[in-house]
Amino acid sequence: MRLLLVEDDAMIGESVVKGLRHDGFAVDWVKDGDAAEHSLGAEDFDLMLLDLGLPRKGGLDVLRALRAAGNPIPVLILTARDAVPDRITGLNAGADDYLVKPFDLDELVARIHAILRRRSGRAEPVIRHGALVLNPISHEVSFEGRPLSLSAREFALLQALLERPGAVLSVARLQERIYGWDEEVGSNTVEVFIHALRKKLGPDFIKNVRGVGYMLPRQP
Image 1 (tube, rainbow, N blue to C red):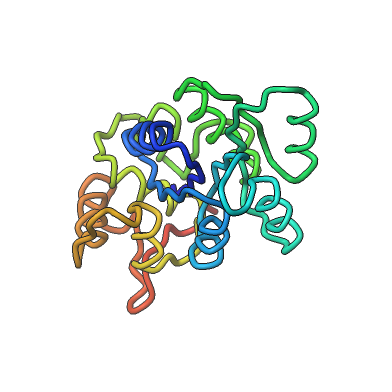
Image 2 (cartoon, helix red, strand yellow):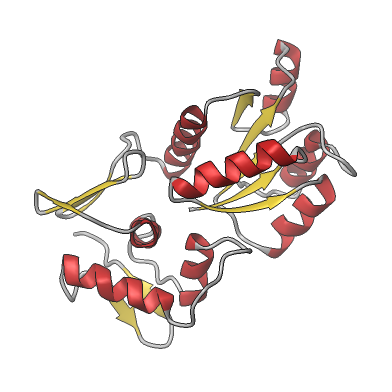
């Protein structure tokens, strides 16, 4: 799961990035509105965490321009502006949720998962695919009724495939989902994680579409 954090406060930004990465998210961090727009135009993200009081271009202006361009990326506003009119303005501008600083990291993670669950049309928190059950919140996975132990990267890669069964995801796209800009990526890391997952789920669970990427077949 790849997130874009737009936050100019260094202490808050460092804390959020550290906490979310520990929770298994890939996080890219920019510090002003212009950089946010450039990042959104250059990369694909699953969700944006947006401060309002930003240098160069304010958060509300970024949000309004984003929605005017038809970009549907989920947006969670993180701000110290706690007045009801400010919340209404943010939500009416196109935000999916609004969290006031200071906030608890666990609540932030729960709100991120809730937004993404609603966007994907899932009512329950877990993702099911045949005998596989993955819980994005608790980071628990079971297969055929038995718990599986996965590394953070294995979990993130498996979740990316589970969210789009039947779709072929390229190696580059999978790398984007599990690594941020400033994280070193080995030349065959995705293949290594796929191999590890196949050892735990079976050799045919994840399909290789030669020259294209990997996929989970749709369930009948």
